[in-house]
Amino acid sequence: MDGHGIYIWAAYGLTLVVLAANVWWPLMARRNIIRAEKSAMSKVMSRRAAGLDNSAIENEETKREDRS
Amino acid sequence: MNLFVASVHRDLLVHFRHPSEVLNPLVFFIVVISLFPLGIGPEPGRLKEIAPGIVWVAALLATLMSMDSMFRSDFEDGSLEQIVLSEQSTFIFVLAKVVSHWLLSGLPLVLLMPLAALLLFLDEAGIWALTLSLLLVSPTLSLLGGIGAALTVGLPRGGLLVTILVMPLYVPVLVLATAMVQAAEAGADTIGYVYWLLAILLGSVCLAPIATAAAVNVATDQ
Amino acid sequence: MLSWFHRLGSPKTFFEISGRWQVPLLLLAVLMLTGGALWALLFVPPDYQQGNSVRIMYIHVPAAILAQSGYVMMAGAAAVFLVWRIKLADVAVKCIAPLGASITFIALVTGAIWGKPTWGTWWVWDARLTSTLVLFFLYIGIIALRSAMDRQAGAGRACAILALVGVVNLPVIKYSVEWWYTLHQPASFTLMEKPSMPVEMWLPLLVMVVAYYLFFFAVWIMRIRNEILLREKNTDWVKQWLSIQ
Image (cartoon, rainbow over all chains, first blue to last red; front, side, top):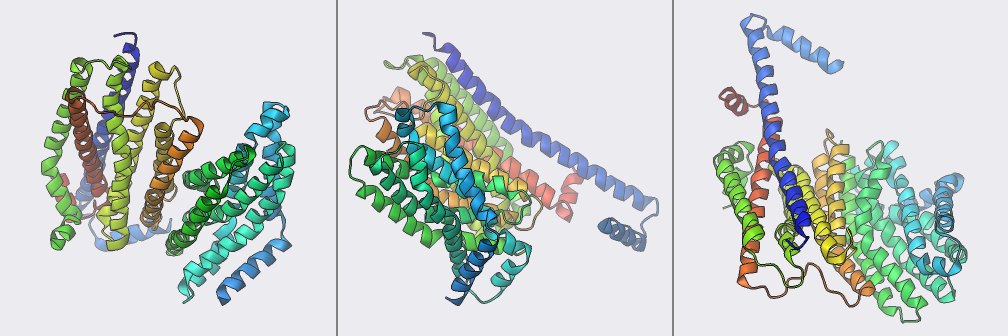
């Protein structure tokens, strides 16, 4: 390729890497968000199931968290 | 009009009592210029050739150094919020701030131009063009820089961020001003550059305070 | 028409509509990108002046076009946010900045790589590359301001103001850089200029431009959806959606 080959491959390669990273990053972020929120949700639900859902107690806890 | 005069008067008074805030950027300006011969070599021919660029970059950096304090002290003691909440026009207030900033940083820089020209071996045509270009552009620098200052006023380490935000906006005036000085040194007519720089100045006077006032509103809405 | 506009501004509606179009859009973009790239690499004839390095044009020029129009789109979203206070517009601005910066980065580096076999140097301060560099700094400014103000209440409006200031200055910057370049390089062959190209050359370019745009929108939407999930995570519809993931 008249010696320009390495430049062409470098340019295309870099473009591929940057574009792929731009797809990969939001995919990973989405997975992390879903995982984090699901575990937060299940924590709340398991506390409710264990009968710990006394709204007065929960309000106390959130107030304490806000203060700290 | 009252607010305008009062604001400028107050800023000038405060800075005359604490001159270091005004002097530091000026010293910085001279220091930066002095570093170039040390870095590049002392030959007059070479220094003279790149002098417009050096002086202008040093001037931009010195201006950006002083930009951070434009709104900060008012923000910190709460008077910024008072002015925004009052019925006074934020646009006029911003304009007043820009004027006092220019009087305290742009104008002194203009007065330092002969010294800079001396250090870098600019000839007479160059000195005149440099001084004129800085006179025309320094208000624009204060106007555009005010936008960055207002956007970052609430931030703890806003200083360097202002540089990043505002530098792209300075590119056109930098290009025009250095070209004007180079044209003057080559003996060409510079009136065209003057017109362009004036046009940019007028455009900035009309538009920049709008953005700055909007940014001040954002900063005081916390 | 206006009610459709306001309805689209609801995060939930946007999330549902985009959910259906997300995958096909991304697939189509990837398909077109691959096809266009292969076309550029294998089937376009070498340029009589530049040889094979002209193939880089097919990934550089679409990136340069998108870098600029991306900033304009960002400014459009910023204006929508400032004027109509539609929060989704702020999400759009936040999500487009890193994407636009990446595309500008691609334009910069492929432009530099393209310059090496043609000019012999890795960088040249010509009008196009220089103004692309300044555009890159403008994007970085938006990202830096957003991250410095991250959780503060005014972050969206501050970034929107900055985006609008940038877009107003963009033509001034471009024009002044181009003029500056003619001052210092009077007789020049512009690397990136496009003289009348035969169809075999501009058709794949058109394909790549469209492909880049589709890719841009697909990734933008992906980021917006993530941000919506984060901002609306306490609402019922998000909780419901999460439970079926």
